[in-house]
Amino acid sequence: MQQTIPTRSEADPRFTWDLTALYPSDDAWRENFAKAKESLNALRGFQGRFGEGAAVLLGYLRAYDDFLALAEPLVTYAFRKSDEDTRNATYQEMTSLTHNFLVEMEEATAFETPELLALPAETIDEYYRQEPGLAHYRLRLDRVLRKKAHTLSHAEEALLASAGKLSQIPSEAYGLLNNADMTFPDAVDAEGKAHPVTHGTFIPLMTSPDRTLRKSAFQALYGAYGQFRNTSASLLSGQMKQLQFFADARHYSSALEAALDNTEVAPEIYHNLIAAVHESFPSMHRYVRLRKKLLGVEKLHYYDLYTPIVADEDSKFSYEEGQKMALEALAPLGEDYLAMLKEGFANRWIDVYENQGKRSGAYSAGTYGAHPYVLLNYTDTLDDVFTLVHEMGHALHSYLSNQKQPITYADYVIFVAEVASTCNEALLMQHLLSKTDDPKRRAYLVNHFLEQFRTTLYRQTMFAEFELWCSERIRAGEALTAEALCQKYGDLNRQYYGEDIEPDTEIALEWARIPHFYYNFYVYQYATGFSCAIALSQKILKEGESAVKDYLNFLSGGCSTDPVSLLKGAGVDISTPAPVRQALQLFDQLITEMEQLAEN
Image 1 (cartoon, rainbow, N blue to C red):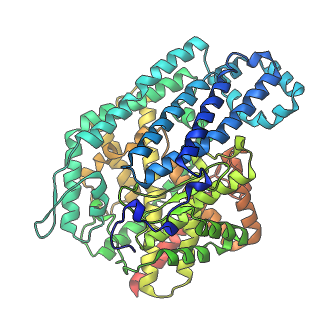
Image 2 (cartoon, rainbow, N blue to C red; image 1 turned 30 degrees about the vertical axis):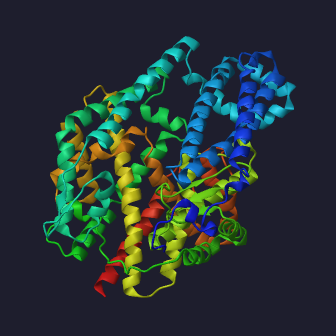
């Protein structure tokens, strides 16, 4: 671990990504930026012409693919250079140009959907007969045309587009309230020392071994949200109303159906997730009782949920050790997968350490025609090793899809994005557990795994259930008052966590601090993705080569079919509750092991 934070120019090149695979210089980027602008002008030339014949439509679709091949590396280079040092004025300007370019692209190609939908079905069929080259684009076109029943007249669409500007108000206002206007009093620890409470410090404070500090931070945060509860309720109500308005306008049966239709996911999957988690409430209640016992508290509170029940051994893992652990843990995925992983490690796909001005956090960014790039801020912890395999899971998903699919179908939807990354994490966890019989070490690892289940599968499903209730209440013409929201959210917490945790009144306000409720039925995908990843990791470890082959085909699939079918090809049918139930069975087994370890 580096002891001081260097400037970007001082960073060791071995641990920085190499963007010359995209462009050899900033000047080369600028030259290609100009070419992309010209390519965008060529796309504009197709406006109003789809009815002229099959050759024109095919020409547009090919020109669009050519444009994407130019535009993707431009966007990647600008954003990655900016993230190296967010203070750098040169790359601030470059990202500003890129943002403007993306808006220009949206405007320049906005004619595509309405003009395609204006073509009669028999005309489209005739085009396929006239131009065999259109067969490649049939799925791309079908994804537009299948929404014809939910697309209105030109005048109505124009009106909805104007209304769309208003639809962002609840989210934007919530963002300003939550991030800019709201402040929290300091928390005080057992020795009377003050600690600032912010969005960034809250969860770290909740993990503190100082229970006085945890309680103080908990009350400080939710006390502030309580002061704005009516404003927050009005904003969330506005969000749900605008979603219902657009769902009604486009002839969907519900806002949920409208949201999930965008990713070709049936509402039954959402409902199956909630039902399967409800079946497993006894397991979560059992885990809560175990947490209460291991923390040694007479009464368990919601501010006790994040503090570790097993102390970290404070082990350190250098980046080189992290790479070695990743290669060992992911060996079940086969030599081809390991070869790509080694290529990424050896050829500077990864920006490893923090430097002054570098963007925080971690991510993977795939780019068609080039290898992916991964940003880390590695500090030698076990969590950093998990982050490494997580982000490389995303990276190799993108790498394989980009290699195996044409640019038309290389991208994949959010519904499957978290599967590859979480599968890698599950394989790492199983590998670490297989290597130790030490009770303390195993207890620490099992606790880490249990918390992934609690926070990802249970908690995100609870969020999804709350969001659905809000939506259905609006659809029924009922009000979303602060009182109703707090009552429902408190009830859900009691359902999910059981009777062995105190009904702290503050937790009923948690809904007011969750920005994901403004993401339009997004959070359920964390839980379904986690469940699929657990099922796939177990399948890979049990079945070996045949399961690996199916899994690599899934990683190579891009968006060549709908996401549920892609997962079925890998051996996981998320259209049924089975993968969620399978994951929850593992959760129950882990609790049993934790109980046994606690007795030793």
